[in-house]
Image 1 (cartoon, rainbow, N blue to C red):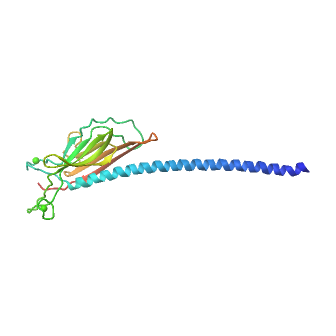
Image 2 (spheres, rainbow, N blue to C red; image 1 turned 45 degrees about the vertical axis):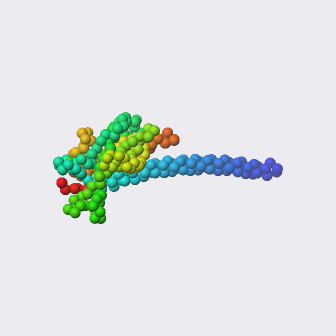
Length: 228
Ligand SMILES: [Ca+2]
Ligand SMILES: [Ca+2]
């Protein structure tokens, strides 16, 4: 009798042990899935923040270039501004392929430009004849490197060439490129409009978890079309 009454209890014990084991396995699996999912969320968030910061910087560059326009200071028919100068930083070799857009490689270019300014104080950036007035300061977007990390700076120089403004617009910039219809050899694109500038910026940031974030922004800016 005792054996008969003990059997169901033994079975119940085994069943509950099996139940606990199954629950433990399920909980472990759920924890594993959640953990991977949270890690994935964190990676995604980091990637999105990286891309958003890059896009914001590129949009600010384009916003300023749209205010600029061709400037022919000596009226000889050719523009002094905007002009492109090679960034005085050695070209970086393309790193081995990885996730994300094509890796950067090659030289960077800086752009120097002028923006309109109300010089005669009549409330708009034109003179009495309706001709655009240009701020005598020269503005630029220049790629610089600090501790091996590339950045893009907005700079302004006064009429004597002294630096009067200098601030970082973007970090982790591996390459900065401006293309125009009559740009420098190798960078010119005859398909672009007369007043069009194509801005290309490559961003790259090495993460802790042996992960490299890469992002590339390509934006077009139409400068003011100033009649010669
Ligand atoms: Ca000229
Ligand atoms: Ca004015």
